[in-house]
Length: 156
Image 1 (cartoon, rainbow, N blue to C red):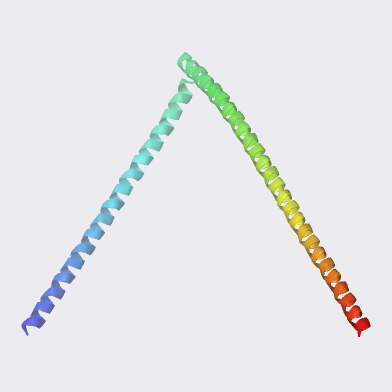
Image 2 (image 1 turned 180 degrees about the horizontal axis):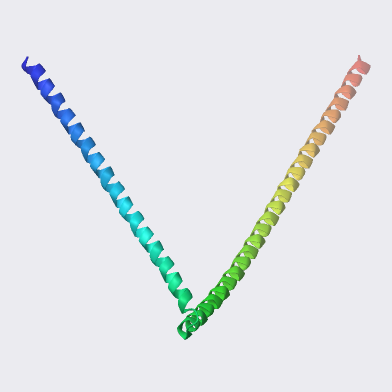
């Protein structure tokens, strides 16, 4: 009975812990949702602020200050364009270097394959020559055997 009560108590505690954990998880999710909502609100405010700034800039466009800012932006744009052109040039050079490396590697591979094929041809040729030499040797031995056989027959 005591053991059963301990078991029930343990199960009750586990259930309470699980409920507490679920409660914490739900609270954490609510907090995250609230944080997300706050971030959305900040984003809306920032977007509104950005729109307000754009409207204000549009109004200031005719002023000398706006002309100076436009000149500065134009200068920055030209610098950025020059930087991009330089990067494009570097990229083209890098691509050309890579292409040349790839070509050289491919050429080296082809040469290596050709050397290998040449080596295989030479080995095959040497093998054929060796077979021919053995065949000739066998023919000689056969002729010699026949000659000895004929001499033996002639003596008999």
